[in-house]
Length: 467
Image (cartoon, rainbow, N blue to C red; front, side):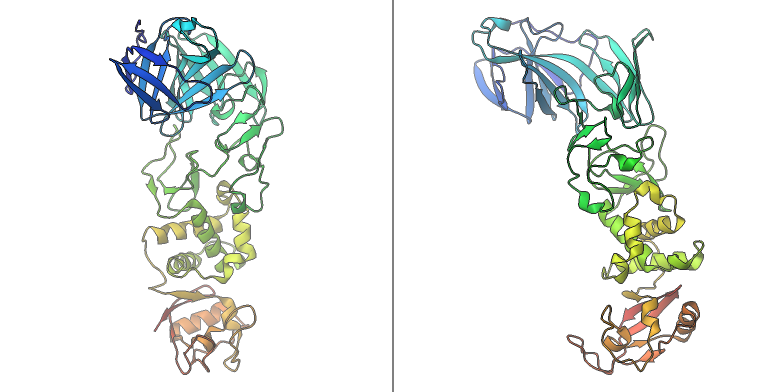
């Protein structure tokens, strides 16, 4: 058996060997059998990938065998005679490293075969990445093509080694090619399925004719105000949705959304800035998911005094930062389901950049999760405006919507905190400075006690420690 090597190309994960015999992959199989020096072993995908190929021309010659470690293989089989196959060797981030074409045949003698119903593979592309897109395509004979992508990662121009233009492509906003010859990887560097003509976006298929996914988002409950079929939150000129799920998102310490990495892991990072190549400087992963981050930030926004403010004052910032710090210890919050919280969750991360109030809520959560300064002075819970509207003579446990903590817990407010809270609430303020719990309510056994002691007041929010 003759060995073929790839001239002028180096692959760090590849070793070429010459087997004695190779039993090629059969249709819909996940393994192959290879015999070397008389020893036979079954190789199962995707642990180690072994493909017998003719590396220079077509499958009509004896083959070398390439062993790829630490990679994965995905397959497409188009059920149209003569049954062409395409295999993709994938890297750790699921990017395509190389593309292999296969021919399924029952012809005895094909490629030296003594049996039929086999598939023979040969390489057509080796891909080199820069940013989101595969910028360089290397052919088995060593020739290269250079792809120029736009800000979304869509391939616009393909050049030869000499600089000559091979193809140009223009797209409608949602990705349908309207001029030129679409490359194999086109809109946002994604490939179309040849049979359905739908974009292969990983978890879901995408129809660029209508700008929608063809199935619902598996995480649709996390964005209740959006259609489960929506693509890029209806902003295809500035946002991408490369995999049909939620990507890892990056923020700066001020709560501004910097962008995402396109990886559907629901992770959140803080970084200094987004670089020109799409990477992020000094990125640090937070200990919560992006979904939980948004939930906490919406609660901070909903519980704060932002609704009545014209700008983010120093006091409002301290209020939000305090709520976020306490929320790490006590996740019970009336404002979690408020209209303001729902307003926050109805916006995309990039849309939130347009509101200083909401980015301050983001910054507050980032400060709390990363162990920043606690403006609540060690508080374990907080109360808002609603608790200040009832006089000492009201001894009810609850209004029917929320507990009256002066009765279930009892409280003691310092002179400075009391005067500040009263001034911030205004004429509707009726709360006493001190009140012991008048009775034991349910599981509360606080009769005669003042368990809550004020630690801080910002805006209309008072913060408590429990004694």
